[in-house]
Length: 236
Image 1 (cartoon, rainbow, N blue to C red):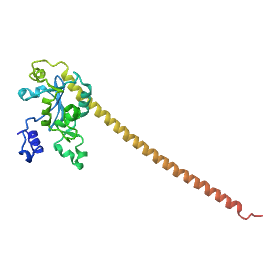
Image 2: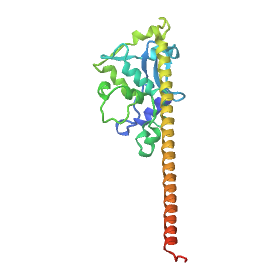
Image 3: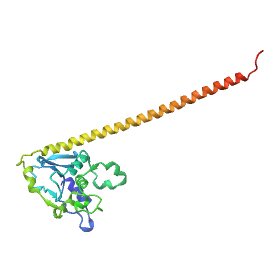
Image 4: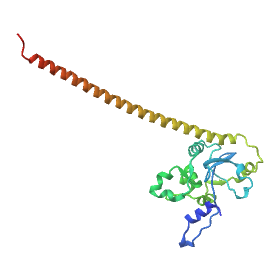
C-alpha cells in the first residue's frame, strides 16, 4: 500500500464510523506549465517534475482547473518559486504540536503545498480544518468552481504533443528560486557584516571614551601638581 494512503488512513481513522475510511487519492500536485507540475515528495521535497514521470499511469490521473484560473497565473508561479526547495513533511499533522511547529514550519507534504497556493474558499474546504490531506481534494470533483481538464493534458502526458516553452517555465521556477536563495543569503551576510561593523564602532567609541577619561585624568593631575607647586614655600 502507498505510504501516503496508509498515513491518511491512520490520520482519518474514525472508530465511531466503522474504523478505516476509503482512501483513493495518494498524491496531488499543481501544474505550472504544459510541461509539468510542482509537488512535494519524500525524496526531493518540493520540486518540479515533467509529465514524463507520469507516463504509463494516465488512467490514474485527474487534472482539475479553477474556473477563474488564467492561462499563465503569475501569482501561482511566484508562489511556486517561493515554495521550491522546501523539505517534505514526514510528520504530517504533527505540525500542530507546539514544540514541533518551528521545526516543521518549512516542511510540507503534497496537499499542504496546495493549501499554500489556494484559499480555503477556492478549495471549498472549511477554514476550521487545520490540515488538508490529498483525499480532501477529491471534493473538488463536485465543486462548481472546478472543472476537470484531464483530456487537455493527456496529449502532453503521453508525449503526443511537442512541448513549446513549458520546460523553460519549469527551469525558470528552479532558477529563480536559486537566485532568490542567493539574494537572501547575500542579504543575511550583509546584515551580519553590518552588525559586526556596528559592534566594532561601539568598541571604538568605548575605547575612545576610555582614552578621553585617561587624558582628562592626566590633565587633572597636572593641574593639581602645578597648584601644589605654586602653593609651596618660596626661597629667598
